[in-house]
Amino acid sequence: MISWREGVVTRVRRSWRGASELEVSLADQSGPLRAMAYPALVGEVAEGDRVLLNTTAQTMGLGTGGYALVVAVPDRLPADPPPGPGHLVKARYTPLQAVVLGVDEQDSPHHEVLRDADDLDGMPVVVADLHSALPAVCAGVLADRPGARIAYVMTDGGTLPLWFSMTVDRLREAGWLAGSITVGQALGGDLEAVTVHTGLLAARHVLRADVAIVAQGPGNLGTGTRWGYSGVAVGDAVNAVGALRGRAVGSLRISDADPRQRHRGVSHHSLTAYGRVALAPAELPVPEGLPAGLAGLVKEQLDAALAGSAAGHRVVSVPVDGLEEALRGCPVRLSTMGRGLEEDHAYFLAAAAAGRHAVAPVG
Image (cartoon, rainbow, N blue to C red):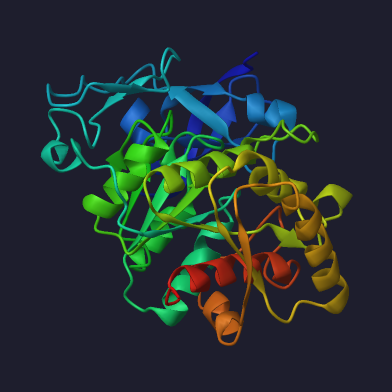
């Protein structure tokens, strides 16, 4: 189940918050490999260090997660962490399980705030099934509401360590995100929470967010079946927003560039998540000005998918003036499935439209 290798770090290529990208020469001389280390888990890694690697990603030919992962620096193990608050265990019962301080646990300074919190006060929450939508949704929010406080709630459908995401680090540096919260088995956010529910409550009552974005981290697990994909959690997120009396806005996965038929127009992932999984209502923005053929297909697909839903979703048309400029002004490169803004314009425009609609006046 795991492909193991041993190697020596020949270069630290670059680092960002919580992660270091390395070049590693393998002991069996089959390298070099591009590798990733998370210092919070394995300690700081330097040139010349001997490292033990999990190389399963290379064996499988993965794209988004195509790094060897440093499991240990055996000749220079990190010191034990100092005693401190926190008893939540994440990545539980794996070799790299980690103890973190939960935002709402008894030792947290926010425990009193969250102990009885159960309401989002109508806060808009944009839900998306791909991490690549995150910067585009932010662009749509900030295009109409500069200075809005945006919180990112990262679920555990993709990468578990938030540190993997250079996007989140760059958005934080640019002031586009007020903070991040990792929920479920995910870890590494500014705040840690057990569930999407507590993550959303922390976004509202601790980070004081004006809008939250819920999406999995980089990576996406799919089997080419209706139900077997990690993005099905989008529907569960809508239900959580409804239970906490928030306002759910669905970022539709729209594309006329994806070569796979099941993802053309509105992806079957979105159609299933909103049409079958979400039992609470969501507003589903569709950007104006899509090419005629794509716009017709999107309408046909949404009409069919939502016809049998009792959730009460509302499809809304969103003007796109200014969103092109907002997307081009993103502090990170826009990319989904290897396609940029020019190659998959409709996808990013739909995500930005969701952000714009989230901060639009209600009524």
